[in-house]
Length: 236
Image 1 (cartoon, rainbow, N blue to C red):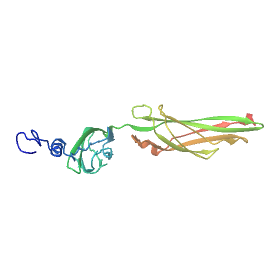
Image 2: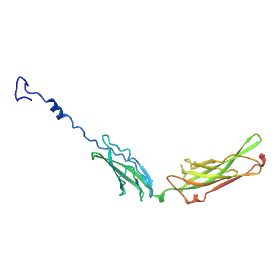
Image 3: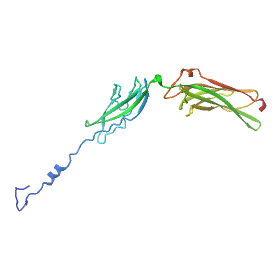
Image 4: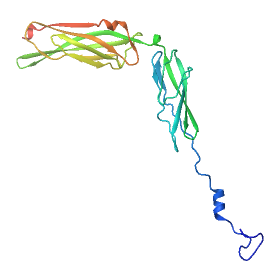
């Protein structure tokens, strides 16, 4: 400010502080790009839709206005949480690109492993057994039974996580359902009945087997059953 050179008012010149600060202060409003999050890894089987999740994507200084998915098999989607059905087995790389309200973009990738339905393990009922037990209370004898159901795959390996359902009949009538453990076995128990006389028959029939990740073989359409006859004349 002032005239060039030295004078008694400005010396060799004064700095315009406001203009200097305006010059060196960064321009406000710089946009940060969004962060894409494609989730995963994912798994699935051929012919069954796989759901993808892009909801964890974020934008620190604005909002995400679009989602663009590439599923690695030629299919795409603009949904936040889309589905895609693969026709061939394999491992696919999926890409998610998101854009914010300032047209900045972010990308992320994940993998999805698809197993061929035809090669997926089938499961079946390998064995159903029934055992009985009794207890005495005063002059009364009470009898119950337990059934152990074994579920195997087509390689003969135990299947964990299969839901087995069935029903008891003859000596007692009740429904049971349980999930197999790592040994492929599930144990269900009948109601207890009071013994009166003669033989008792406990029969457990498996009428359903299901699993979220494998296929139940045709054999379960004809449920297996096992029955146990108990002669308790000596316990009267």
